[in-house]
Image (cartoon, rainbow, N blue to C red; front, top):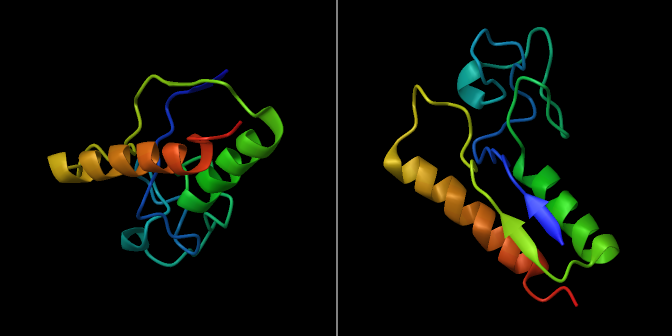
Length: 108
């Protein structure tokens, strides 16, 4: 069994963007080109999860853990509460669930 929670997938993640932008969540092109610390390919503490890292994690789970069941308990959207819309939350949630189905839907 695998339990996924608090994924916080950021579909607008930009690895070249500033990771220390002064907001609760950074690493988006709207934060500007990094002058201090870039988010980088694998993300940063002040950034939410890049899609590529999420896909790599799901590949590892599929190839090594091979779960019989996957439990997802929510909190999937990124932390950008000041600019979220119903549509952006739905998009992050549906992308997360579709990726889980794509990578783990038939992992046996």
